[in-house]
Length: 231
Image (cartoon, rainbow, N blue to C red; front, side):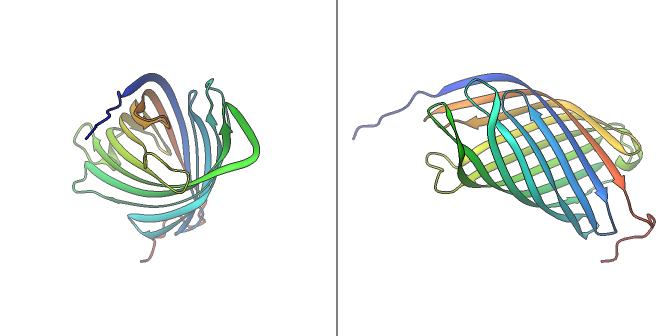
């Protein structure tokens, strides 16, 4: 029996990732979701949708995203169209801790890229399912809702499915550590993200080490902002 082993090829790259995310409450249950991300020489994505509160600690959302993926020279030129949906829920075992989980589905329509050339009007399609676990802890032991400073540890696994997926269902994993500060209607997080991304070539992997800045803003357009959601 002959066993052929392939030598693993690993590429390490530095990166800058900037994200801007907003939520806007329209009523006690409905809201708008918007986020924009840019990761240098890798992707740009603009995602928008509608959110619905099922419970005080659980919501669903869905919408449409568009963006551009990097090609061989690092320029962001490959168009992607992406309907998406998600469910998010959280729990607080103590006042100074929060655990949040998210399951997201992406329907990815990516412009075909053949032998270094982009094909106008032609797209490859695949499904992607993502699971994220996020743990947040206040830095001074006070309740999270009362303290400005916190640390956040996130881990996300992204899996691909579909006819175009041949060698590996693992799209990538993302692990990040942030220090964050809460303001009245916004939050700023700065930290490090590590991404492990298998490539289309067999036994080839990219490791991204990203300096990351995420900015969150909250808007409230409800007429009566003191009303609790009835469940």
